[in-house]
Image (cartoon, rainbow, N blue to C red):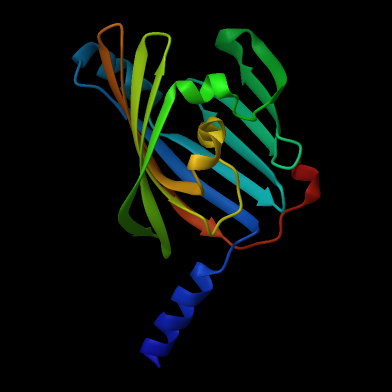
Length: 199
């Protein structure tokens, strides 16, 4: 019975999830003590992603950075960004196309590996990504699954070489001598009905 239950859970997890809620947390760290003290003030950055069919909404809330909401329409290739940060001008919004251009892709190198890891029952493929822009290099280690139909804002500019929704990302960057590592991990995935009002 236990083996059958475990098998059925694995099979269910590997079906493509087209609607639900994803919760994740991001932590930033630095080897520079001064930078680390500032990052400690920010603390964990929590996000909730709602997805249904071809639309995805991600809400991020943090006491230091304020609130931001991203709504993505993967059919229209458009993204609406709404931000509310009293320390940075209050409420602002912008609507943009997120389709990767040839110019965008020149700055990105993507290497898909054979390495896999399982997160919350979903088998994820590892991608090594390097982004060079405005004199700064960002190195990313991403584990993504193609069994969740949501869109991730950070990977919209990666083009067709990248496939899937990241369940784990580790980003290393060095800008103006400041080294920062950002680690994002999904800690909950709920298969539930999402209201169209979210989008």
